[in-house]
Amino acid sequence: VQLQASGGGLVQAGGSLRLSCAASGRTFSNIAMGWFRQAPGKEREFVAAIARSGSTYYADSAKGRFTISRDNAKNTVYLQMNSLKPEDTAVYYCAARVGGSYYYSGRYEHEYNDWGQGTQVTVSS
Image (cartoon, rainbow, N blue to C red; front, side):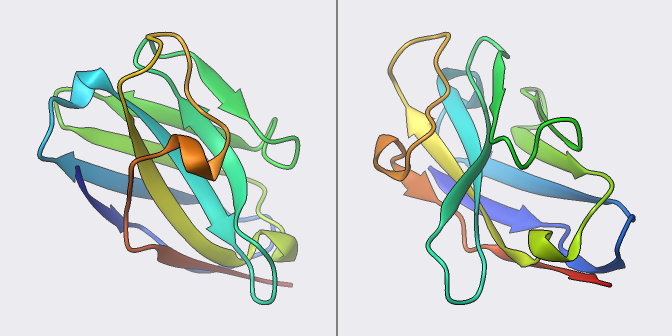
């Protein structure tokens, strides 16, 4: 699966951004999708994921502020980020998980087969 992430940028604390990740190379409805992020000097961490069924899962840091969604007709997954904080500053990566359970979305890096190039999100205080 080829993935192209976009939508990052510079935003003030409390603001919003919507990230997009366009997928190609596989039937999108057969792919579970996830978002991860990596802040400077830190390991990459899970943010949110959406299963083929549409069920979602969030990291505690994202719950109540971020929303992951998918549009199978557009082969795209989104991450709507609201109430952004400076600690959300990171490079955000989308990832694709091919196969597996229809209802499971994957919360660990090793569960994903393909990765996008990342998009920078910077939140100023």
